[in-house]
Length: 594
Image 1: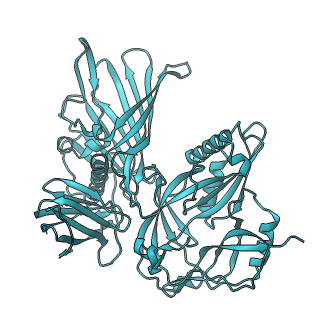
Image 2 (image 1 turned 60 degrees about the vertical axis):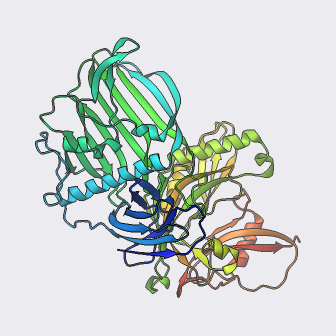
Image 3 (image 1 turned 45 degrees about the vertical axis):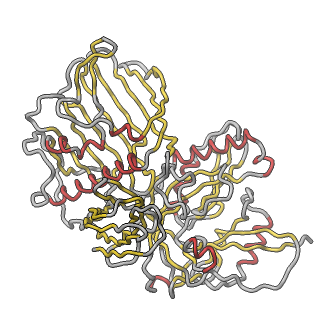
């Protein structure tokens, strides 16, 4: 479904401009980070967090346009782009793919491949559906790596392994790479393992078949695909080459999240290897550089030759740096650097007692970062060595953190301007479920963790448990004997030098009817301190969430006094439409020393 119209505009370039939004079918809510492709030209863009996109400097004429997103059915149509000064506006609507209620999967894929090719939806609709979503993952990866080029750092640890001996690290290697190089060569039959010369010497070459090769026409035409049951709970597609293919080739499996349809990891294995290679396998795990855009994060390669020993390559990718732009909306609080890889979490609002029966207005999906910050006393914050050690603690927590891919959130965050124009004075506010909490870890004299505590609960047992477990793995020789306080929030702090983005949180967002209202109080004087806390949908303060803003102290007399004062107050709760909701609030208290 679409609608298009021409808008007047001032554009002296003499070329056309196309703007639009991708929306959920039959709603006004945008589909964030969908892809929109124009032909001729094969130019692609990601929509922003509101579903908006634009193409500029287009030659006037008719274009084919395709909108797509993981978990949705692609939508194709045509649009007439008018010459400047007109701006062509278009709305595209996507509908969710329909999951089959009853799906039969194999316990094991057949060994023989006699009917290769793309799965037929009339023969195996479940496999065809999952195969199409695998294809969508690859399309999004290609768009990211070619239309949003970036540089990255690859680190390889080369290890030799022999029976009866400990693993021996041969060397470590670090090199810089460019995203577009990963698509410079493509899969070809008979080219997986080949012989040639290098520097005048005979060599054996092994072409690394990767995830993005699986939808190459040559690969599809020469491989069978099967939906296979897997104990991990992930959807699994097995593939293997046609049985008549005598040359070395690739078989393996792709594992896909059953809820979000995004690829989580993939395995590859060399079939019919030729000397001097006896066996070779390769596995890769994926992260999301922006929501629902997979990219390889780590890989593990094991090669066995006709000579002693097993050769292992453990590799990882990082330090992503986009050359022109990152595919994120700069007006939305998104990744701290705009390009930091982080897991995407689907967050849903868990309504309180009264709001449960209240019909909420239609939401708009947005993506926000879950940021962790080490709180430092002034003398520690001024010490470069201390700050370096604190950043290492953040990296350690991130490495051990395992948050579920879908969580229920109990409270709204801070209300923010609904758009740049609203920030300029219109006054409309947007609000979304947020995550806020504090945790502390005691390090004993040896530098390892002695105790972990929840200072201010996030009101999500899944989030609290994940951070407590991750902080139990903290080790720091530089900070031994100290207590480290971690604050987490979906509102980035003003100083990000002691912060790290733990995850993306995709949440519904609403326009507010009213923010949580602070009750009137008599004028006061004295020293001040600010406290953050959650006001529930009944207007009561959740005392276990009260904490002193900016203070690394776990609990101090001021916090206790603030809790006493808040326990006697009743707020007007935040409202979305006519529904009361919980919300994070902050208030400044006056204190007098007696």
